[in-house]
Length: 532
Image (cartoon, rainbow, N blue to C red):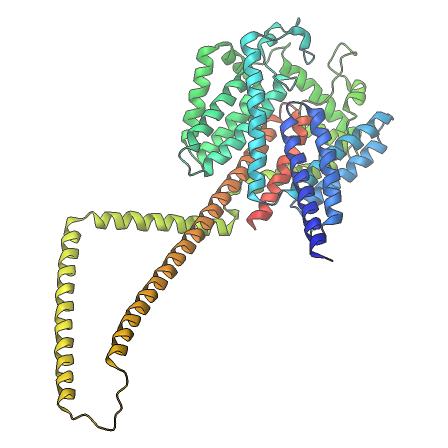
């Protein structure tokens, strides 16, 4: 193969790699803003990745942390659809499309995100998207919400929901779940950054997202983020608890109804949403008892629920999910499928939260800590007046001893020269060089010495520059490792928030949030491979 064809091949490979990464970034950006474009981005990314895998012979698939439970879940989900009591062709289409999007998202991110720079690009994309979502939420809160757009609740029956912002995600609870994830990612990065300029910016972003979260009036999301801040405050930085209390107090001061909404979590009345959830849970437990092995079928909940409607008086009301993540998954894919799903879910959460799993990162951190300690100790000793005087005395005595040594050497050298002068010169010894040649030789020797000194200086400069380059690479490597470690920790917090929120709601029924969950799970697995 010619050199030109090799270069052309490398160019095509790099171009396809860039298109794959761009597709991943486009999916992350449009996920909460325009989900249809996010799904198109997955298809484009799949095509670019497929072409690259055929062009680049060096590209190899790699094994991720939880490939096995995901494969079991996908297989059992397919079995549940084909064995579902709800014989509906829409179930097959729904399963193939949704599981296809989820699985391809997991593969695209897990197989193609391989460097810290790519992780940083993805996090910046999430940040840009969350900024747009928050701005739209503030706009809705300031200028009001059109009742006609409230498809998620009866605006006439629940007039207090008119102030609940939903931004671009269509539902306050879904928006709250999305903001929880973004806050968790920001907390994780904050826990690892050493840049004093970035910390105020990250804290400000957390406060702004928390304010928008309060505008959703979502009880489950508030409880979930409270648990996240509690865990973060206990195990990472107690000042996070002060920040959470301050933001919550400010929100309650500006809007006292927010406190009433939160207190309603602990006050259950006969017509409250909590009672409705309990009724739905009872029906879901009955579904699990009747279909414990293969479930009612992935995505079949809304079709099977009318047969188990023990609570609602209006049979025309559509209940699309169980308002509980754990019961919903177990009901649709069976107990074995649910175990596989939560193997992946909680496995990702616990491995992401385990900060000390990376041995090399700890070594770098310990070296940095020792260097800092040494620097502080040296500074302390250098500022001591006693040690300063001792250093001056040592320097003076060293200079005196050096002078004495030079005098002794000169004395012996002079004596040796006098002895050789008294000896008669042999006539047979030819004269080596002429007087003029001696002068030229001395000049040449001087130039040679100067050139040698210049060469030494060049070597020293080169060595110093090489050392600086080495230090810069080490600093970048350390910063990259800090960053990806913080992102991984933030992913663990995000899964924790979804786990707590899943007790009272199944927000992962929402397609954008589910795609986001699969993206973050794959990103955590990819970061684990980078760390190893």
